[in-house]
Image 1 (cartoon, rainbow, N blue to C red):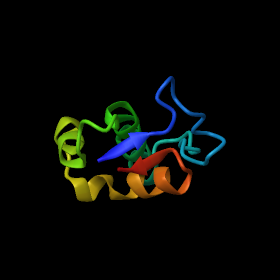
Image 2: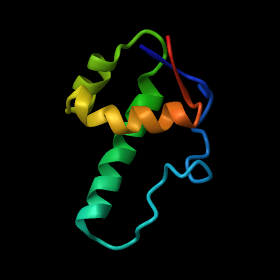
Image 3: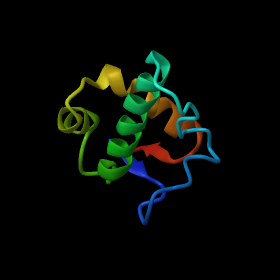
Length: 82
């Protein structure tokens, strides 16, 4: 389980390098948007009550798919493992 360290509003993802930077359609852009959706789901549901499997199921993916987003959020001290 994780806890969002910024529960009252979205942390500034751009200054942390977590917001997509590509503005044109490409395979890389699609990957960035998928990861952004995972980041948003993690931020919304990481309240200490939902485990990672629950969040992945709500997102329609596996925990392995969310691994990169989890790692980036932990590196930026936005998520903390409980």
